[in-house]
Amino acid sequence: MKRLAKTTIICALALIFMLAFALAACSNSGEKLKSAEDIYKHALTLSTFPELVRLDEAELGELGIEAQKLSGYEMHVSKDNPLADEIAVFELSDESYKPVLIRLLNSRLRSAAAAARDYSPEQYDIIQRSAVEEKDGFIFYVVNANSARVVSELKKLIDD
Image (cartoon, rainbow, N blue to C red; front, side):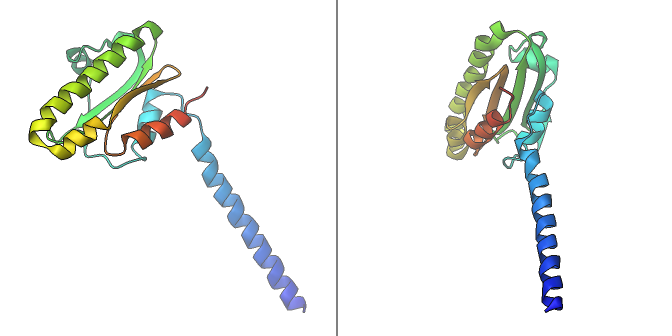
């Protein structure tokens, strides 16, 4: 009888420790992200992306994006040219720049879709399902097979 009681207590303690560890691991998923870099890094965990390369400020300028109107950004494009995958998180320092940036990114999507229509129906479909979205001073641009899910999850992580 005493042995059964000891076994029950040990099992109960083990269960309590497992629950505590599980809760600690899950608590990070509710963590609020504060920078474009943090959000970008988290986005990479939400889907499969090909090898990406980061665009620098000069390359942003070639796209018409004014880096000085941003307090932070991460824009990465597929290293493998035929793949449409791209991801960007922009943190605005100038809220009045938001409609301009959204227009530029939507224009980029339209141009990519027009080009992909001729060479890859699969890439065209990915681009068509992608979008530019905004929340609390951040602009999200995700071109990926799971872009809707990625953007939805990122929006949940931004402080209100």
